[in-house]
Length: 334
Image 1 (spheres, rainbow, N blue to C red):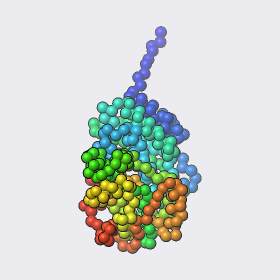
Image 2 (cartoon, rainbow, N blue to C red):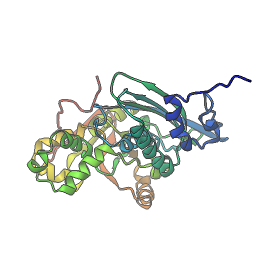
Image 3 (cartoon, one colour):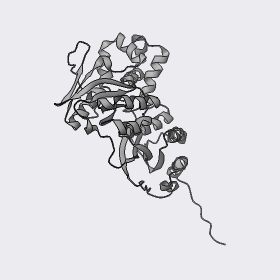
């Protein structure tokens, strides 16, 4: 009688099985190979970006697994949007401590699946590893633009107007509320306002719907991830220009305005705290109207907050017209 052999499916293979439905790109080979393969369309450039999020740094340990998954993908999609790129797919590296069970991973995979459908960005492959530290999720995303048309942060020109999408500062306030629920009362917030601010921290809203319009009309752009003041300065340094923005023009949500009215010292974290994942763009006068029209058609609000000039550095003017000084203009890990 022939000897029978049995195979045991490893924990890692069971994790991979949860993600196979997300890997519908033909170059992913159903996650059965060690590598994926992408053939760029003729006349296009690949746009590449990688960002990681770490438990206790970018999300709280008790945040829903699905929200953690969506945040990991969306912070990368936000960068593609600012570059004018269309998403193609992504690689995922998931580092899990021993205490994380399959239910958490299944919820993570479901959350990721929801955004794969929403943004048309398919899983291409990746890796799963164990770690003695917190949950860590790294995403490397791939997008495409017509050859030579990627919108760079170094493209701003003197005379351009500075525009920003959405609202600024919500996530920076949201993380404070997560750490201290008593701030809800201190800031005079309603339950809905509190939920709005926390939601903006947990789940970014990338504006990929305006990517094509940015590519057509913006001279320079980047996503606001480390704080408006600091990221504007990065754009200025990359472009060799200066910029002046006005705090009274910076778009704030009703919740952020309520908090700021109760505590004016919150202006600094609103402008420097980061995690906004909005788009900062430099646009010449003649292209303002068509860009705004295209953005509005995509459901995205763009607000003019200042202008670009010669020189170097970014200036943020307060309501009294004086330049504001910040302890730290943007979030930094180091």
